[in-house]
Structures are given as C-alpha cells and as structure tokens.
Image (cartoon, rainbow, N blue to C red):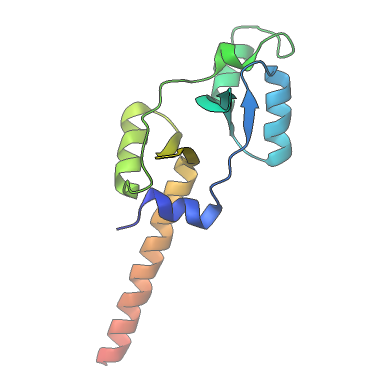
Length: 144
C-alpha cells in the first residue's frame, strides 16, 4: 500500500514558503512563477497555514479587497489535519474529501516535511493502477 512518503519521494519534499506578513499580491506572483496552487505560510520558521488560490478567490476577489493591501495572514487557511509520512494514500484521499481541502501538510518528528496535494494523490493512484494492469498483462501472457 502506497504512503504519503512515496509521494514526497517522487516529487521531492521541498516546499515553497512565505511569511505571514507577505502581501497577497506577492504570494500570488510567487505561485505563478513556480506554477503552483498554494504556498506554505510560516512564522518564526514554523508552519502556521497554507495560502491557496481558492483562499485568494474567496477571501480577496469576492470580498473586493486589495491584493496589495491584504496580508497573507488575513486569508490563509489554518485548519488542516496533520498527517505523518506513513499515512496511506487512501487515508489522505479520505481526509481531503471529508474536509473539502486540496492540500495536506505532512509532518515527521522534525516538523513539516512536505505537502501532499489532491493532484499528487490522483497521480499516485493512477500509477498504482498502471502497475496493476501491467502485472495482470504479464500474468496473462505467461499463462498462455
């Protein structure tokens, strides 16, 4: 059974971070430059939340706020289940679905070690299915 650690090993555990006092505009620029949908928000080098494109749309654009005057700490999401690297992909998907979120922070004994996205979970699930299909094909060819 595949785990969150398998996703982090495949994509790398590095995360893009910003401080709580970063403007939303700067955060959105960074996300655009890195072609990512979220950034990890830190304070004193500690995880405090995640700012997502969804946060920007719902908490800035729809409320008529200014991207240059609004700080990340005002719109970031802070309620995330914390998972360990040993959590299964299936459990990650259940947490994301039940909490209506697209990102899960992964923590080990040293702190934040990566982020698992819904896209990561889907990719891993597809890879597992492709492996199963290949194994079944090999089995069928061997038995003929």
